[in-house]
Image 1: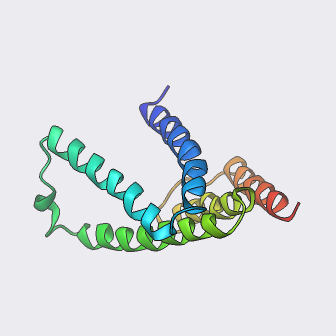
Image 2 (image 1 turned 45 degrees about the vertical axis):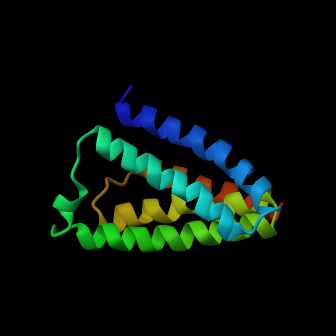
Length: 139
């Protein structure tokens, strides 16, 4: 098995457990407070990994991809704060599938702008994912 698949499965487990816990918390605590606490854990964990791996994040500050890292952070912040707010106000069974549409939109961006290989099979899978999300939200 490719190592990235193991990481993807670990991400699946993490996000699968994160979401119900975040929803429980946001029903009792302001969503921005939950976002601050949970994402502080993320920032501290990332810092620990960077330090353990002896990586120097400042070495990339002048790189060509630094604006991409900053923009990614802005969009991640908007997306995550909105996600927490949605979880605080709506049912997890509707919020998560709508949020999950990032699978479709991110894949389309990969095909259209990043040169990822497109195939009829991949296209069908993405289309089925969109249909599944639609059926989940409207059902």
